[in-house]
Length: 275
Image (tube, rainbow, N blue to C red):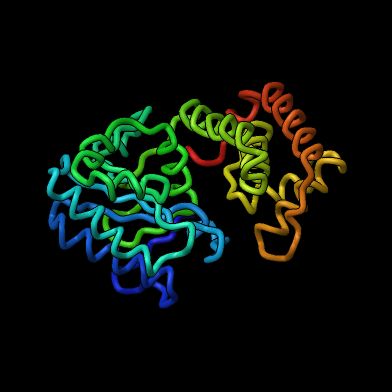
């Protein structure tokens, strides 16, 4: 079930102190335009690690944003990043008319992540104007919010976010899997755990974190691949591991690609998120 946090009850550790400051900034900039502020990702799943995780959240508004509002938000986020984890912040602003019922591909008003930091610094107004469109990742984020998300402020989660259509969720996470297969040599831990959680959905309809994906992979994959997953998982949770060879990555990538193709659609009738 999603967590409902009353205003002012945010945990007093550094990631939640950071989120409280960011939420206050959004409310100051947007006023009554802001209708909700919700956490997803590793913080919501309870597997956040300051050293390797980012802080993921979605802000919901009742109208489109002005250019002035966008630049104020981005400047505010940039000013907060020095207080954040090394991986940074990732957020999207969406309008409430695309969250319930869910529109897919999902339109967004503004997006920010560390990957776009230099673009914003080089051309703030131009990047703010360009950073608007549709994002297929949002369907997966909405599904996670409905399952384990944390409301920092605003409407209850089940009122703000409607059920995610099953085919939209599958399309969203399979695109993640395609990215993971392409990036497995550069980001092996991220790729392996992400592929496991996508395969867990395809086989069993499960919606998991990367940590949960690793736990599922160690249990369900053949031993020769389970050991590779274990190395990625142990690195992710901070207990060693992470020493993966190129031939191991190539073999598990080939295996996961075949399994994903073989299991496509099988988990849809068992998906746990949409009621």
